[in-house]
Length: 260
Length: 227
Image 1 (cartoon, each protein chain N blue to C red):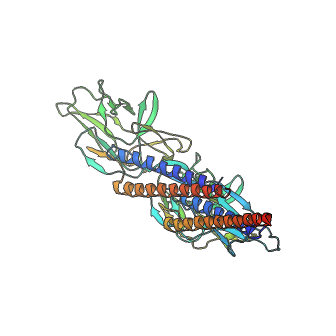
Image 2 (image 1 turned 90 degrees about the vertical axis):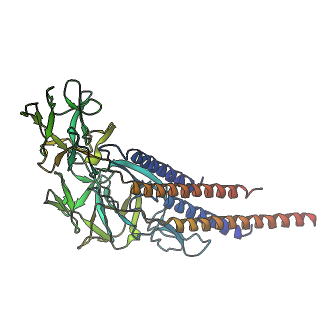
């Protein structure tokens, strides 16, 4: 059968994946701490019909052979960890990271990492994510606390009604040699993989981890205009590949009509 | 048999190859640093045809990703794979577990002094290809040029294998590397679409001619029976 038919089909599949990724990015345009994804494509293998450097029947050396490509394939969808915009919320348990670090939380007994700083208090007074995963190291805010202050370096201080401050601890931050290799768990959580490397711990403000801004949230880093442009491109590329399939179909029809 | 039949069959096969190549180009509209292929021939309807890769540069776009690199001018990154040295223009790099700069397939990207190790947080790549990690130099990306690009054979996965004479691949003395940019595919959809119509119609014409020859042959047989 026509090789081009399968190449065009692989092109359609690739563009469909593009649309899937773009749709998810757009769906998360207002998700706190969301990082957009990007699909990466490569060309598939090539079929070599004649080798470069071989000789023709009249003795001429062919400078290049004939190589026919077999289409495109997705090789990965990677997260883009560019800084998102900051939104001021004035909520004292909202924290944004200005830099490359991650918070560590424990979800179902496993270490997970997140950039979403919309923390809450659970019934026992522990600082946790909206899903109830406790921020590490665990910090318990006493029940008589009227306000909590978190400074740039992540030191959490609780103030009682008399205005006396008690230091609860310091938020630790983590970074990865290759954050693009992190596995997305959903719920704004990430799990380290072989590709990302192990988490390196540090304190906010040191070692390029970034600093903490209390009363701010890091919004999604999805740029709507850019996504729309990508969507137009993916849709048109999908369409043009479908035309190639139609053409392949017509060519096969022509070949079939040779014998009457 | 009428001798024209064989020429027409060859012609149809060439148009089919042209179509397959165009189809592959279209499938790779979104492939990073893809270079389109063309089927070239000396003369229409002759079997002396070959595939060539058009190495004209694709558009370079900003991605903001720390491990994305693009080569705005001629040249290739040099990659060490288990099968030997390969070349690529696809600068979608990442790091492996040991912190070595690798391609999507996990093969190390070679610098002037071998693989580049990145252990730190802040990666910057200067215009000349010098990689700095937390402001300390960590190596320089090796960019090479190939004298005769027709000796580069595509292997898929954005890799090229060099099959020419030794010494045909030389390091570029003044490389230009664009950090946080990627080169897009150099396929122009409009041009490919026109070529696709062209290949399709040529295929159709060859079929019409074959039918005509068939018709003539049939007539000849019928007439001779009557006599």
